[in-house]
Image 1 (spheres, helix red, strand yellow):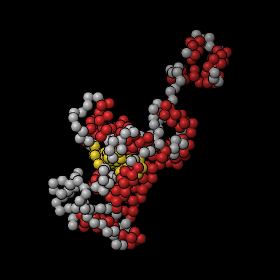
Image 2 (cartoon, helix red, strand yellow):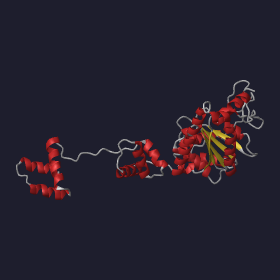
Image 3 (cartoon, one colour):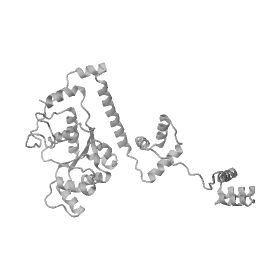
Image 4 (cartoon, helix red, strand yellow):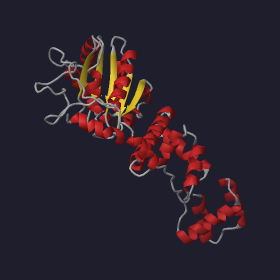
Amino acid sequence: MLVARLLELEAAGALTTAHVRAGAQVGGVNVRTVWRWLDAARTEGRVERRPRARLELSDQAWEVLAQAGGNVAALHRHLKATGGEVPSLASLHRAVRRDLQAGRVLPDRAVARREREEQQTRQALADLALAGPRAGGVAKVAARRPPHLVPEATGSLPVEENGALAGVALPAGAQLVRTSSVRAVTEAVGQAMATQGAVCVFGDPGRGKTAAVRMALGEAPPGWKATWVPVPVRPSVAGMRRAVFDALALPGRFPHTSALADAAVARALAEARVLVVDEAQRLPAPCLEYFQSLWDHPGTRITLVLCGAGSERALARLPQLASRVVAWQEVPRLTGAEVTSVVTGFHL
């Protein structure tokens, strides 16, 4: 409005420096600023302030910020170290504050740090696997006698009619082999069962996470039952409530209200039980909150096993459930020293 009025006075030939000084006083700016506004209005036809470019933080920047525990100064140092155009520290503070007020959630620092360390461990394992055939020192280690691995006895495990472990497809003549990863998963699940906590089993696809969990549950103490809850491609809370009801094989029809369904599930979970959620990486935060409510219910006695490629990242979306995880167990790929014995035992 101020610039438009000054332009009207200029068009009428009545504009003076006194008008400009008065306009600067009204606008709370310098006199030179008012003259610049007038010049922009004459040359560009613009009487409003030029809109500022909005600073948008990338997902990678938010990940760095989460790993730094929300320290914006650390993010600023990281951006300077990577090179390129770097906004000011004040601009970063404003952008972070704006997005947080708009509903952006900064992951818990402990979860972000754990995810970073696990990523570094996975990268280190990959580097070692690549360096094994070439490096002399590593080759000497690989040349040592591999650990003794034996076919897994399935006497205490649920078996199908063909003698195979339920839920694990094996080719004809093949047998399950207990690897170091299976032993680690067994220990992690046992630790969670001892405390009635939660365990997260993760790793890249095809590394045997599901088979390892099934083999681990074959050693469950007497009185414990295991229930596998399938996860659909696009899960919802209502769908997961029905999936848990069906997985528990509860009698009668599915209740017509969520309260009745939750009460029936809670009664069934009053006995010691392991609730396994495979493909947990598909679960959005509301579904994770549903499983947390089952675990938090005072009348239930469950151990929650979340398994899947990327399940650790899914848990990062719900820090309050991630804080209840007593063991984060990755299933890595086999080392060169294990491959020979595993393949031999597999086809024994």
